[in-house]
Amino acid sequence: MHIDARTLPNGTLLEADLCIVGAGAAGITIAREWIGSHRKVLLLEGGGLQYEPAMQDLYRGEIVGLPYFPLEAARLHYFGGTTGHWAGWCATFDAIDFEKRDWVPHSGWPIRREDLDSFYVRAQPLFELGPYEYSAAAWQRRDPALVPLTLDPRVVWTKMWQFSPPTRFGTTYRDAIFGARNVELYTHANVCEIESNEAGTAVQGLRIRGWDGKEFRVRARHYVLACCSIQNARLLLASGLGNAYDLVGRFFMEHIEMPGGHLVLAAVPRAGMKMYEWTYGVTKARGELALHAAVQRERRVLNGTVSLEPGDPDEVAKSTFQAMPPAVVGAMRESRDRARADSPPAAAAPTPPAGRFYHVISRHEQSPNPHSRVTLSTERDALGMPRVKLDWRLTELEKHTFRAFYEVLGREFGRSGLGRVQLLDWITSADPGWPNTLSGGWHHMGTTRMHQSPRWGVVDPSCQVHGVPNLSIAGASVFPTGGGVNPTLTLVALSLRLSDNLKRKLA
Ligand SMILES: Cc1cc2nc3c(=O)[nH]c(=O)nc-3n(C[C@H](O)[C@H](O)[C@H](O)COP(=O)(O)OP(=O)(O)OC[C@H]3O[C@@H](n4cnc5c(N)ncnc54)[C@H](O)[C@@H]3O)c2cc1C
Image (cartoon, rainbow, N blue to C red; front, side, top):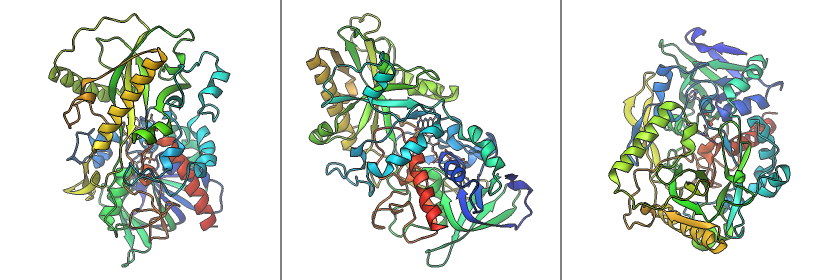
């Protein structure tokens, strides 16, 4: 059932078994799981059914650390959430992403990759992806033209990605949610405060405020915050909840997505390069190159993958951003042009024949860092909520990772005789700073991280806020580390796991 919360009388009290705040990928995934159950579920969505500039403005905030996308453009604030303009790139995390790595401070999940396996299988169809197959060999069996490069897989392996159409959760699952008798979706229902008992050990209700000054409250047996990483932290910080150890908002993570080099193939492989090609809306699966876990251990680097984008040497790297809305692509082009103007012209290189030149585009995890964080600003939004300040920070480990990754990649291409990797100047430069091509991947993670101990995590391994038994968190904000690939498939798998736990709890 769908109700526009603007039609509710001032002072209304809604009651339910389960209340989910935020109807994006995580919130809609959980709500769908409860359709037809004997429990009453409220799904509260701050925005309406489509984009509204005034709603979007509630996301505006300050950037005080490394340069970052404007916050009001980095997430969508309406039913369906940011899947309204995500690109649909999906891949599973690797076993090493969950491990404690002694060279990566604060690494290690309290759950293992195996704990997520069955939930990945269930998440896969929600994104309208192909079969749950993520090995290059399986895809080659399906399509013999998908042939991995003959690199040593014990050094550099081909990690498979699949591409969602991309599924817009607000469109694809709208009828199911609207038609559910036990799930009530309230749009224009911005939660402004989580009310708790004095000790901060139980949520007693939610306060929802409208533009016209009207307020209503929700009371439920259990609450799930699914507002995405920055908003999850913002709500907890504004409500003074779950923050006994000053962890809420800390460990904000992104993927570093930027060009790192060029690949010039010695010859176009006989099998062609279809394995690594990608066309928006057409490609179902493709490979990217990654370092084997043993090499990551030996070189003490973070995880990540690189895509090979065909081009020519005079062109500035194409990137995943080509799939983005025109305004976003425009902003990217501007920053690229600034970067070009700032750098001395490169020495003219002989032009390799068509089909042999590739831009190498990185997507690397960052090291979890308590100083990379979201805090509250002194400015307030139109509903009276404090806005946020984002202080995105990177460490020397990320720089080291780029250097080591491209060194290993270059050596492996040289050894195999497949081609040469040319590193971009900034990778080898002694300058400790980042070039102005530095970019995140639009992936917000880590602000309410998961840890066994409340001293080091906001939520426990079941995604329940430590010390607040009736409050859980869904979304990438619970990730202790960001993994080498985009987060949404994993956060949806975790949401399914959370939903199963809550079914047992609220049985
Ligand atoms: C341009 C772009 C491209 C991307 N491409 C990819 C990709 O290819 N692959 C990938 O894995 N990821 C991608 N992402 C990231 C992906 O969109 C997010 O990981 C995913 O949408 C997060 O899901 P979520 O449910 O946690 O948050 P969201 O989808 O952002 O949903 C949060 C919901 O909560 C609501 N909300 C917020 N605050 C409140 C409040 N106070 N009260 C009530 N409701 C509230 C919001 O309106 C929203 O509907 C991309 C992101 C962007 C911006």
